[in-house]
Image 1 (cartoon, rainbow, N blue to C red):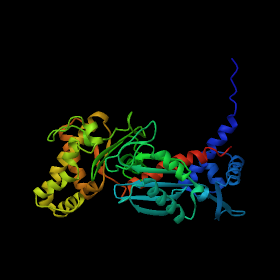
Image 2: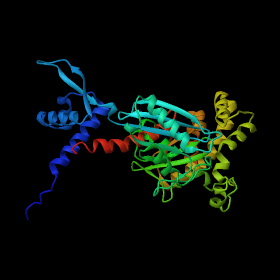
Image 3: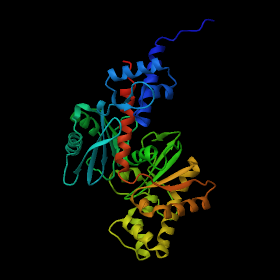
Length: 396
């Protein structure tokens, strides 16, 4: 039987080669045509045609010369930073922080707006986003996507926020309102999931395809990355570990109905959330305005603070163990302000306790993203989508 000729194959190959070259320029650039050819396995002629094609589309530009060898210096090429922009937004109960980055991921502008004393979430986000773009030296016409990391449930089907404990003014229909207001694609993402994206991109889980992130701060949360992909669940509730039934805490009934009215805290939340952490500290003589302050003081106190870390680790291990016996990940990342305050001393205790009470022995580490994990995760999520759009259309 004669082989069937696939229509459009040369076009597909050009697109694949272009994308490979652009990814190399982002990660290894600036590069010469010869270097791109060597790294992609393309001939000199094909590599030159590729660079010319990308240069014509404004996706790469000449940024200098490389001296050496006989003959004229070779031109160096890099991705054109301003070929597209994205904005990531970290939404919290007290503030909205927006950052604008170019397509290389370089953050150029940042803006913060208070969410206190306002009934207009669209207006707050609008101001933060537009001012971040302005500070970046661009405008919304160049912004290809806005991703907001927000507490609560994000419906995987509609993309809407279906429930946000800390944001009572955020509601269904807000997504369409923001899209109309900003005139650009807008996406919601759960804040802990966004933190996991940041961890996978630049933190402790870089290069790890299976891991879980446990967030310990004002609340407790979970993000699961399975084979390199976030697992959200059918309704977006995967990771609402605060409602996990655990020993040592009352298990509330009819949680979904009562939670919608703000009238219930889950069992694990009551055992390991911020208020519980402060109560643990108080029992051993450590007090602070915030839960992270209590843990930070306990770590600084050395042996005197060990009972605080021991008790907190024992409680956290219940949630970590329950997660790990189901998913069996090789890595657990502890994130959030309380986890960061506890540092390696807390991570080591959790790892030992999980191994003591289960059959699995995951490595437990502290986050490698030192600041703004939700914001950076939102930016990376936006960048991944926009690079697919821009780089994937190089042969159009």
